[in-house]
Image (cartoon, rainbow, N blue to C red; front, side, top):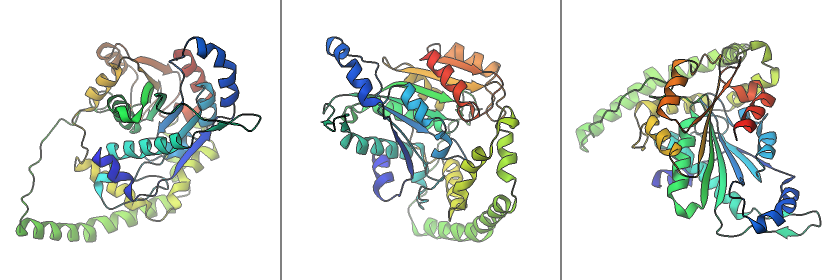
Length: 354
């Protein structure tokens, strides 16, 4: 909880929010039915976590249709720290999955404070205060772990009044599940004395001169100096490169015009290497706990031609065996970003399983 609170204290966050214009009418049509029997499966909000190298913009093509299809009031996504247009703080703690969960919960809480809707006559319809809201949490690739941590936080913290009724993991990059496990290792804490502080100061200075600055310069030259950098990279993520459009490329390319984006990426990598995550569970245990929640449906969607996270074959069979309650959806011919590569197909598959 402390990590989540510190994450939002002084960080500027870029986010997307789509409000379903049909929500009020849908509520009115179902009001009589709900008075007789409460619809415990109705979803109030959809939250979306993007993957490595992307931003909230990657969810843009599917966000409106997805929010409407699930009958939700609102859909929200933010740029994870280190990507997109969100600030790049110096503290490595801000780049953890837990910190990004804190950002998401804060955005949902802000939305909850101002979620009065207006009907066709202009009258306000304030939702019931204190009522638990069902939410659908989506996580793509690296964002799958963040989605799982968010689902657990919602289930354990009564003050949030959020029930993770649906968790959808798209091409999940989970260690020990779809990726090799790094194994757990404990680090010795450096003693807080003048010698260790001096050595750390020398190391930080050396690192900045000989590693950070050359890396940042090289990365900016690589990305900015090649007009086809993003197109070539994304072609390997799409199952069929012919489906890759100019707007797809632009959604990934656009955030790289921001000042300091390469430093954010460097901080993120350093955060991962330093194991700054506070989670005491590995990715497999996270999936096990979330899939065991009594009122939560977990769905994994993957493309058969995913060359980034290879889920096809043995991995899919392993997940079916070890996580029998998880629903697995295979999308033929698609790659690592099926919700961008085939928006309509993704929505059809999701509708069928949900």
